[in-house]
Length: 225
Image 1: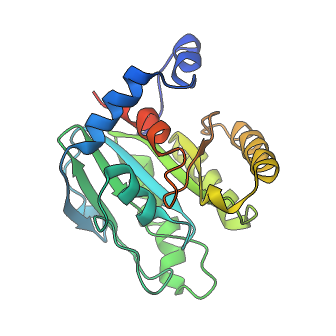
Image 2: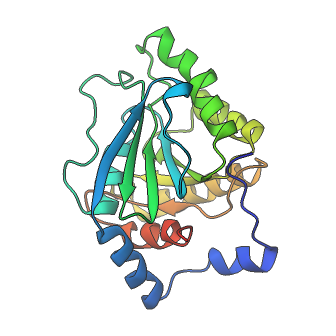
């Protein structure tokens, strides 16, 4: 079953400590490697063969998945946002220098999205999550300025059922003042700990300002072989 982290409690405590300069630099080098789109799948039987470690990016439509992937890899147009929220229905796979595979998942929870998109998250997306043996973690993006929605909690429940570790990543953090951001982080930390598959550390990022991008790289790069 894909996605479960097997770190001992001691290893877990070490992993969620703030990264040092060496970790930040090592992660920068990993994410500075060439990153290329290599596969798209709209059905389970279209998935590429499992190879290496995969990290998937999920979140509501317009949460900033494409912007975050671009910021992490230092590329302006690697991942492209659809002009129509909720329109993208496929899993997009990106190879990061042969060290990691980044998977851009369709957005969810958009009010005007077609019924098929919602069905995909119950069908294709769940089957991908449950059956992908090399999927190590899902980065679950949350807009700092938007409250947690029922669709977010529904996806967390799906991740619990699929036994795939998810880590909440706050996006657009520059849109909140420090006190509000601190309250947001605390609330999301409590929410993550309430889920069996939730990873206790919440990452805080802004693709626009660069806030938290080096630390997010370090956390994700730690999953690379």
